[in-house]
Image 1 (tube, rainbow, N blue to C red):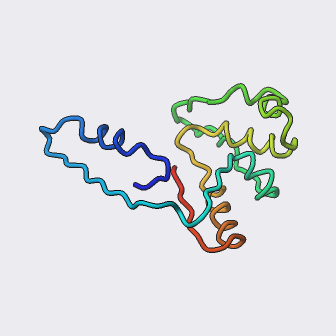
Image 2 (cartoon, rainbow, N blue to C red):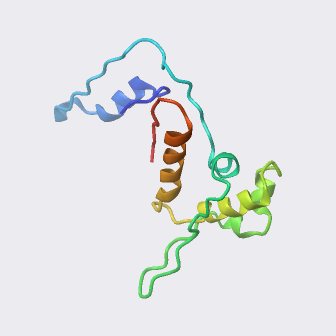
Length: 134
């Protein structure tokens, strides 16, 4: 695991809570800074600026004879709720697409969006790396 912002000692403490299990957590640090700038974007930024034509799948239809999936982010079903939450800073199209994404059940990652972002970076940015946490 690597991150520019990880609290290494907290991470070590989490995995090495009980020394009786024999688990040893190794740690090393490479001093210095990254050679590339780190850019942090939220999903709404990606939909608005990088992928304005991307259409997310939205919540999946219920399966026959399956246990009812717990709906999430019901607040987002109210018309205009996403746009209000984002303080009107994003287009209606972006808010509608974001609404579909946030209503997907937990554990159903929008992998097609993730793939499109990585592809966009690979094709449009200079050399570097993409660090993805899912």
